[in-house]
Length: 307
Image 1 (cartoon, rainbow, N blue to C red):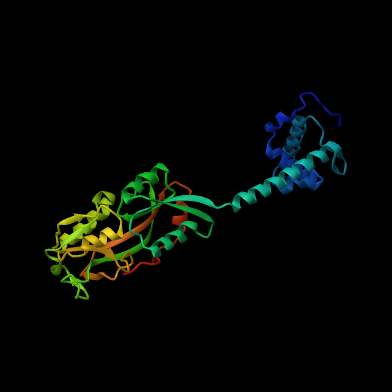
Image 2 (cartoon, helix red, strand yellow; image 1 turned 45 degrees about the vertical axis):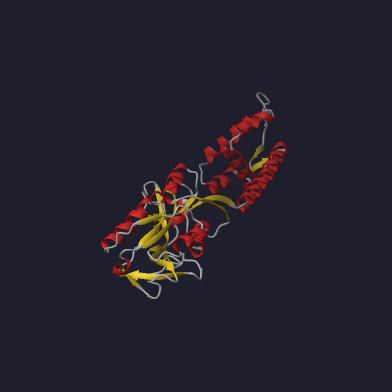
């Protein structure tokens, strides 16, 4: 076959080559005949022959000799095949190296999340894959906005929240109990009832951080006959939390058992009946690549949760 060098491509023209045609060229070179290559590729033989001709035209050089027994590579074809195979090898190595690099995810974290819950959330986020996680302190309400804006991959937040556009996976569901100092008049009770909390003030976080959660808990208290005066807890420091509770016989806080510290001067007591609950969820934007990790996990009995 005579070479037609009109319009032969320079190095810069290779960008116009179609990967599909190169793949077809390799298949024909390996199979030795267009008929066998078409069978392996699951395409029609005439279509494959046309694609090979178009590739030769775009390269400006013959790649095969058409012989009665099949297709034989020309010298030019052998050179092109070697280049394509080297390029494929480099591509495979690059893809393998890229897959070996851990993804990075920025995760919003609300205050007071126990370590056991954080570990459970990380199991869900990694889902058996390598993932480099960086945490960013953010309240539950802010996380909803940041997730929708794509500024966070995941968020660990208190529910309920406006979950439109989000995918949520519960990672902890635990009853709240009462935290008080060990010399508090109620400290000797192994379990508290709602009437015993009458007259007690509540050390409480600013509701704007998690308005849905705050409203749900306070409504539960009111339904049980306790409408406490709230003392805002502006800081997340345990030292300040402890300082507020110590020495006040009319001030208590609400925490889950798992979030209560090992401070010897503070006690945690269950309260009932029907205490409010804290539900922590792992969230991602619904249409993001991260959301698939949440929907793939079964959470019938979230690890670390208590009843």
